[in-house]
Amino acid sequence: MKMFEKDNYDMEWELLGIILAGMLALTFYFFRIPLLFPVPNQSKNSRESRFDVLRGFAMIGIVMIHIHSYFQFFHPGDTFIIHNTLMLSNLARFSVPMFILTSAIFLKIKEGYWISKFRHLVVPYTVFSIFGYWIKYNHYSLNEFFTFYALGKVFTPFYFVPLLLQFYILFYILNPIMKEDNWRNIILLISFLINVISNLGFFDTFLPIEYHSISIFNYIFFFVLGIHIGKTKQSNSEINQNSKFILSIYYVLSLILVLIVSHLFGTDLKNHHTIYPILFLLFVWQYLNDFNGSISKILSYIGNQSLFIFLLHPFIIHFMHSVDPYTFGGPFFGYVLTLLLNVGIPILISIIIQKGKFLYQSHHLT
View 1 (cartoon, one colour):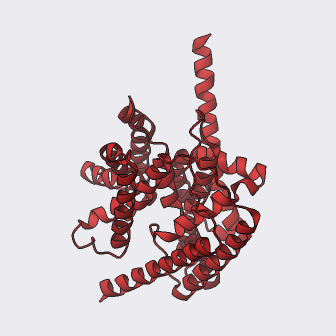
View 2 (cartoon, rainbow, N blue to C red):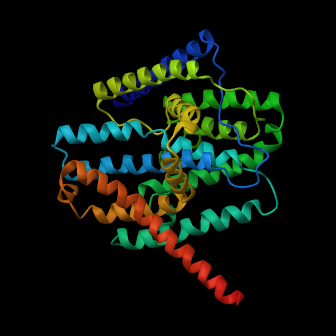
View 3 (cartoon, rainbow, N blue to C red):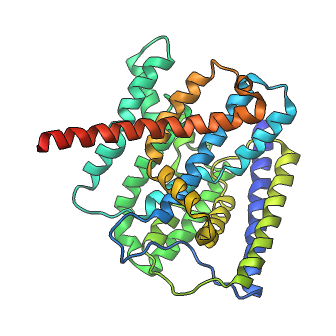
């Protein structure tokens, strides 16, 4: 019975996504608006800050999701506050798909592909997993640690790393095929269908329960879309101001619809519903140039430091579970301060480490 209710709930949210996508398709068609996905500037050799802005949004969103759990831990009976932190958490559900998508955009098979992944992802993840297991659990077991390590369970958000490693393997396999435009479009459509079917729970009975949280089928469309975007040539098309105004109306209506349905259900959304993250991606990309310059720089910097924040933030929120968030000046200031601490402290530690590396290298060079 519970599985049936779960499938119905998943179906309702996927149907909402299909409705939103249909509304968007009609908007683009009737008003002759070009559908412009973000495309990396192929002429640049430096890191593109525009994609770091997207990752900055995603990193803040991930922290917002975890803040809801933090407030719920201390004040489950405060329905007004929990309802609003849940609303913010649901709005932030674009975050993990956005990370996966942006991680795929600049992937290239070149010399040192696996060495780079090992140094910049596996090694930090291993260090933080060992340290996290040591401080979080009272009874130690090598078997338990390796299970948690493989499934990303030392801290709940760590599931993202084993998930991402599977996608790096998938890219290694798909890359030769994805070079062809026709095959790329076919694989993108297949990945979308697989993602929707997975969201509806049809794979759950065939996959081990332990694998569900790191199943690539839950996010495969976003990863393939990222590869597709990375291999797409830039277009000279632009969206004019009238089209932006029309799309603004659509995005506002979509947001209202998502909020209404979210309040009616009062339930945590999944990270991997297929349509909502794409809407957010299109929205941010179309209005990116209109953002305040300082805000864009801050978001870009957060995005540039996202992996470090991602690995350190679970430690901070873990220790904060010994302190009631309301002690920081009530629910509002408690929420804001929690957000600032979980983003700011990892960035500060990252700056200190990078500064130390620079001084160390300078000392040895002299």
